[in-house]
Image (cartoon, rainbow, N blue to C red):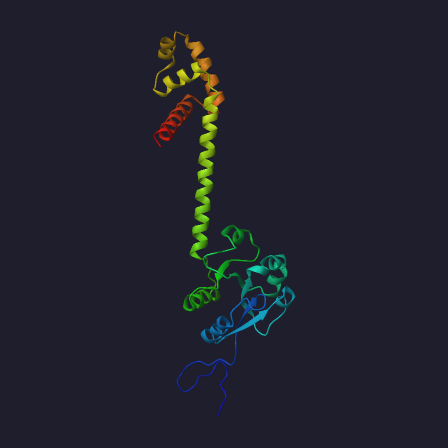
Length: 247
């Protein structure tokens, strides 16, 4: 029988490989990654060799073939990030993902990924096997993956932050409005209805100059730039107060 190398073809015309061409390196504590998952990778990707190590030192060594993908147990993530420079030096072409045990309860956040010197994807291990293998294929092709729950978590956090910001602005506006005197509130109410200084002066029995002084104080207390912004702040405050009273 003639042995075929990687450039020869068998009778069926299909290309045959003599051995694995790339390595998936799994950095994880003993028992944290299911042996069935590792076996499934071997069956799905015959040209991939899976290497499992438990320490950073073992991960920062040369392997028989180039490392294409590094999967890091979330429990070892901080140690791996501390050794990021050495891991990248040893395996310059490898993409790196953190392994999470559960899809619904994630330790890693999008902000963790964004700030990480190493991690570019998050891979839960409790997904359906066909989905898990499809994600591995995506990562081997240079893609990135984030669980939908992780994205929803980030959106919820952004919405919560925006809500706090809006409430903070509303509270600040209410506090500033409370600093106005009765006369200043009266004048600002007239400004919000479009009255000019001359009409406000006549209505309040004041001089136009006095009205201007009041407006200057109002603008300063509210922290706005002009009477238009002050009037908008007045309307917004009263609309918010009315909505709260209706609820």
